[in-house]
Structures are given as structure tokens and as C-alpha cells.
Image 1 (cartoon, rainbow, N blue to C red):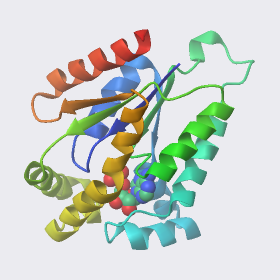
Image 2: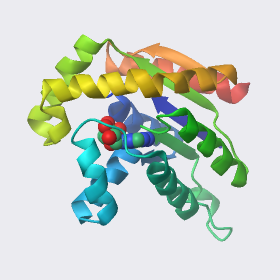
Image 3: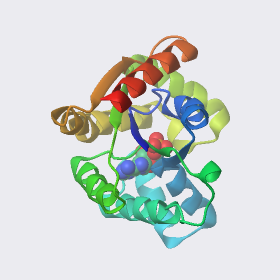
Length: 202
Ligand code: AMP
């Protein structure tokens, strides 16, 4: 089973690369940003509370996202009756974990499912390029947090302050690879696959 953490600041290309990786490795995509946006769309209380923070570019509390991931892992636990053809190849975690306590919780959760993180891959993109990409994405995505330069800079700062230490957490476990996130999508994809295949063989 391959469990991949795709890491990088907002606008680094995680969503795009996830789409390719899901197909190639038959993975289930778990994006906490997407899960939160669907809570907002459904008008749940959790969604309403999360929206207030997301609109300011601030992370939502750890227990909220950990709870969402826990229930998704549970939902996707493969029943013994399912045929082999439908077995998932694993999970791709996109936008999670974003803090060290989230990373610790994920290790514990995966442990209860008798599996673990294979590798964390970080897409590295400088903040000027991120701002350019996100403003461009904001023209079509309809995401309010992609339409305001100040908010984008706050999200990148939030990433640098709180999320970057997560890289050290995986690095200490020998499970971290950084990849240049600027360039052709296909070239970046091949490099990610190379890192995954090496980690799987280890
Ligand atoms: P994203 O779609 O991953 O860029 O996430 C959009 C927003 O959702 C972030 O700016 C945070 O406010 C919130 N969010 C998403 N994932 C997490 C997470 N793992 N921990 C805390 N907040 C999150």
C-alpha cells in the first residue's frame, strides 16, 4: 500500500499532480481543503466555523481536520468482501498534515489501519510565483481565498510558519523528498514518480 503526503504551499501544484498520481497508482485522494469546502457548500455548522478562518487564510483547528481524515480513512477501509480489482492502492494526502500534531495524529491513525506513510513529497515554489499562480487561479476557481493578494501572502506565511516544520518531521524518519515545482507539469510528475518508486523499493 502506498500512502503519499503531497506537500507544498498553496499554488505549488498539489491538486494538478494529485490527479495524475491517483490514476497511475490507484490512490484515494484525501484533500482537507476540498473536504472543508464541501462542508461549507452543505452549510454545516463545521463548514460555517471553518469558513471564517479560511476566509482569513488561517488554518482551522487540528482536531477538526484530524476528525475529518479519521472518518474518511474509516469509510475507505476496504471490506474483506470487496474484489481485489477494486482494492485501493493507498491514499494521497493533499493539504494534510499541515502541522506537526496533525502529522503525529496521522501516523497513529494509519497505525490502527496497519499501514504507514511511504513518503512525503514537497513541491518547492518561490512566493512570487505562488502569488502569480494563485491570482490567476482566482480568476476561474471562484475561490475567495485566491482573489486577494494580501490573503494569498498570509496563506503562504501560514504555510512557512506552521507547515514547513512538518517537513522536518518526515525528514527525521527518512521519508522526505523535495522537488522543484517550477517547470513542465509532465517533468515534475516524472520526478515525483521516480521518488515514489524508490521509496516503495526501500
Ligand atoms: P487548501 O485547499 O489546501 O489550500 O486549503 C484551504 C484552506 O482550508 C486553508 O487556507 C486552511 O484555512 C484550511 N485547511 C485546509 N487543510 C487544512 C489543514 N490540514 N489544517 C488546517 N487548515 C486546513
